[in-house]
Each structure stands twice: as C-alpha cells, then as structure tokens.
Length: 547
Image (cartoon, rainbow, N blue to C red; front, side, top):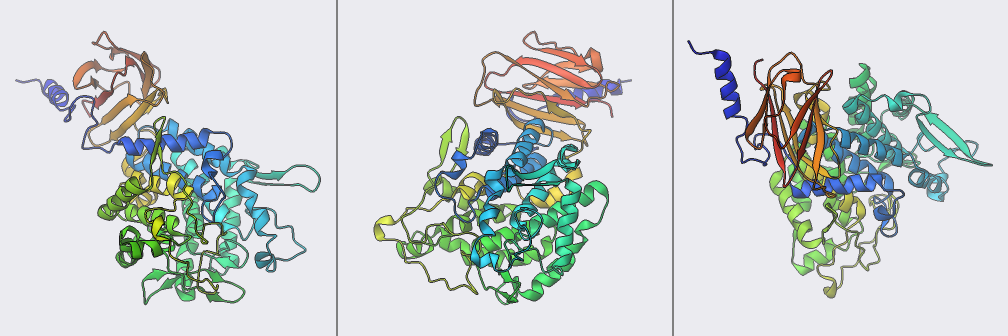
C-alpha cells in the first residue's frame, strides 16, 4: 500500500513552483518594477529629514505636506494589505515615520496661518485660543491623522499612539503652547465634533465643510471600532443622510458638490474630477453601493477631456489650477473601484507626458509649474466655485501645448496610490482584511533593505504556503544576505524550495539546507533563518505539507 504521507509530500514539492524560478508565483499578488519604484520613493521621502523634495516650489492647495504624507500613507497601507501582506517591517517602519512627519510643526503650522486669514477668522470666537490643530474646525488635517494612527495600530498591533501625550503639538517658548492627545482622546474628540455639527460634517477650515475631508475621520473611527469593539463610527449613516440633504451630492448630475458654508447655510455647486475622485474613492471604503452607481457618470464627465489631445480642448482643460489634482484623484478613483481600463490609460498618459523620474530605484513624477495666471497657489476653498466668484481661466497659449501642470500630491502620492491599488484596496482593507492579513500568519522578517527588495510575500492560508520573491534592492550588496521566516509551527512538517528546487524538509530544528550555497538555522520559538546570495533574484516557497 502506498504511503499517503509520501504522496502528499511529493505532490507538494512537484507543485511548489508553477512559474519560472526566481519569478513571483502568478496566482498571488506581487509588485512590478514601477510599483516597487513608488514604494522606494515613499520610503525615501519618509526617511529624509525635512521636506525639501516634497515641496519643489511654492505649496499649492492640495500640495500641502499633510495631503502628500497622508496619501503616501494610504498607498503604503493598500500595498501592505493587498500586495505584500506577509512582509510588514519596512511598511510598518515607514508608516510610523510618516505619522511622525505628520506631527512635525512644518506640517500642521499651516493651520496657524488659516486662523489668521480674515475670510476664516471672522467665524471664530476671538476669546478662544484656536491654535490647537486638531481640537476643532481643521478636519482636513485631524481626520487624516486619525485615520493614519488607526491604520497603524490595526495593521501592526502597535500601541505606540495609545498612550497619553503620544500625539502632541507644541510651540516652545514665550507665548507657545502644548496640546497632547492619544488615539482614544483624538477619536473621541472627532466623534464629538461630528455630533456638535449635527452630522452635517466637520469644518475643514472655519465655516467650510467638504464631504471628502469628512471621509477620513469616518475611516479613522472605523479603525478604532474594529480595534476596541466600540461604535464611534455609527455617525456615518447619519452624516451621509445630512450630506445628501444639504447638497453634497447633486442627484440631477450624479456629481459630488461643495463646499457647504455653515454660517450662510449654502452649498457650492462645484463639479470637479478631484472632488468626485476624492469623495468617491474614500466613500467606497464604507458605502460602495452608492459609489458604484455614481462612478460611471463622474468618470465620463471628466476622463475624456483630461486625455484629449485636440489643442483647442487641451489648452482649456490643462489651464485650470486644479488640473493636476483632477488627474491624480480620478486615476486613484478608477483604481479603487476596479476600473482597470481607465486606470491604465491615465497612468500611461502620465508616463508619456509627466516626465517620470527614476533615481536610485525611486519612481515619481516631478513637480512642474506652468506659466499661467491660474497657477496653484490657492488654499483649499479658493479652488472651488459655487458661492465664490471664479472667472474661467484663459486657455494656455499654442506654444504651451503639451506643457502639463503636475503637482507633488499627484506626482508623489496619488499616482502611487493608483498604481499600487489592485482594485477595492480601501474596501478590502476596511471590510475583508482577514482574507489576506492575520497577525499570526507566516511572515518574512529581518530583510536587509535597501540591499534587498521584496516583490512577493503572500501567505496562502488554505494551502499553508508562503510565497516569497526577493530581488536586488536599490543599494544591492554582492555578498550573501540574511532574512528569516517567523510564525512557523515547530510541530508541523514543512518543505522549503528555492528557485524551484527543494532544499529542505522537516520540522523545526530538522529544517537544514541541502544546498551548500545557503544555510538554514532554526531559532526558537518559531523562526527559520536563511542566509544565501541573492544574485539576480530568488524565489522561496515554504509549504506546510500535512495540515
């Protein structure tokens, strides 16, 4: 009688790799060169001191640091949960660094200029100190911070920001201030702001409410609820009911609108690709049925004009101050709802016309300002129409044909988010995370980045298989590299294959390499340490043989 265990082992080894050696297994997600280039750029921008390469010129409305940092963070979160769920250390470290940058004064002190501007300060009680950037009326900053902190704790089970004072804002010296929060107190503060607004939404600046900015605190509250079993995000259905009542959704045109001016009780009729895209892709994370009905109309209203190469059409469309943000958010929107055809056309357009830069493994689209009276120097609100008088911009000159306005929010963050999002990225992160992501799954750890890149790291829970592909990193070393796989059950039988060849089989300490060019060492309680040359790349498959 045949030995069933031997049959199972032989079957697993024969099927350990269904793709050429060193290539990612095609049945699991992996990063291609451009996706990896975006990851390299985000990691570099997070790790750099200061913000020089994020600014690259005067800051415009949505090119403020806070928006670049937040959308790079969401790009990383989607890549983490949907593309490389079994390799977390680099993404965790970078995400934490982005949160730290978000709390640097160079980011949030923009709020101090907002509250001094007459068009906003006239709505503020002069007897109150409004300098705290998260207490009230600044949800376009505090909402992002809440979502970033919430995702960090939910994805990495790290309580760093749960402690009192772990979130703080300080201006030292005479006349300075210090305001401290934790994840809990920030979440409770923001929920209370929703309630105080009677669910009309929290102001982005004094008196100005935007639907898109209010999506991020909702998602942050959902993070909190999923961690602690609370119901802070139960305000979301009431918020959306109020949003429809006050006109954030124009049912006649199926376009999102705004802003809503609380004091005047009027809502602008703004219809832009950035407003549709930003609101739609974030709303998709918790109300996809509504978005799925609206997206085709919104896409068809904006997509053709953005890529139209007729000089008469192009010179008008690309003269608008918000055109870079329009392009970036529409591309990200298409990615989130799974419209791969539109996403591909827009990314191809950017690759052709936005002068992409590759440097030290990084990919980004550099900032490019166009000589026009509508250059993006406004702050949020001044880009919108409706209650604001806003004359149409003059078309660009014939000799400017092909001169595309590209801002750093689009070039560093939004197109990265789009390319890294395989479809339903936010939706899956907020509704189906457990499909690909669990804290006790087999994980790849101790990777020597930036010497080594990880292009695939996926644990198939059904098969008990961990699929890994490594490649030389932007600072590759010619010598052998060390990495480990953790959460291995020492009582279970595993096989290890490298580049399509089985190199080890056993339990715990008996997992010893048969290949003299590499070593395997067991480390209690649950880790297997590899040491091997990477060369042009390696494919590693770890299979649990008997389940």
